[in-house]
Each structure stands twice: as C-alpha cells, then as structure tokens.
Image (cartoon, rainbow, N blue to C red; front, side, top):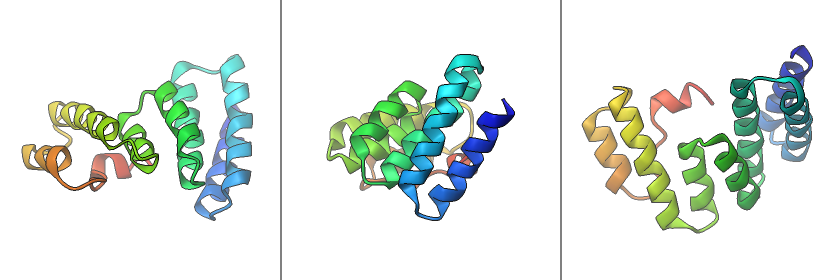
Length: 131
C-alpha cells in the first residue's frame, strides 16, 4: 500500500498546485492499485481524491461519478452544483448535514444554514479538516 499512498500524496501535491490533469493521472494510478489489493477504506479515500481533482479541473460529471462511488455526499453536492443540478446537490447536502448533526459535528443552526442557505453552502469545519 506504500505505492498507493505515494501516488495519492503526489497527486494531492499536483492538485494543490493547480495541475489537475497530472493529479487525476496519479490518483487514477493509485485507484487501480487499491482496487486490486487495498481495503475498502483506502478505496474510498482515493476515490475522494480522484473526484475532487475532477471537480477542480472543471469536469463535474466525472467528479459526480467518483463521488457517488465513494458515497461522499458533501463532495457529490459540490460536483452536482458545478454541473448545474441544484436540486440533487441540495439533496446530497441535506443528507450529509443530517449525518453530521447526528454525529454532533455541526450544530442545529449550521445544519439549517446548509439546508436552506444560498448554494453552495460553506463547507463545515469537520469536512474542511479532511480535505
């Protein structure tokens, strides 16, 4: 799993530097490895990196596909918003805000702001720490 981690981290370096095609290539390489020999948790982590790189590269449809595979509703909501699917984006954010609230990671006020505020909502601190 060391090679997967190295590829994924290098992909994040490219991603943060705005070199999205290189980031996508590295993340996809990591995904191929983790799908063969990795755990489900590792697969989800790499899928999230691939999805976010696609989203930042202005390729929201590919981002949507990968976020759906990873079942990460916050990023899915962002990618759907970028693709112009506001109703589906709001559903994803509502679903995830409910989960975050039940886990006591956001307050009821934060949940209401996510559910009813202008799109896209501010990313909660609990999620920002993971990106």
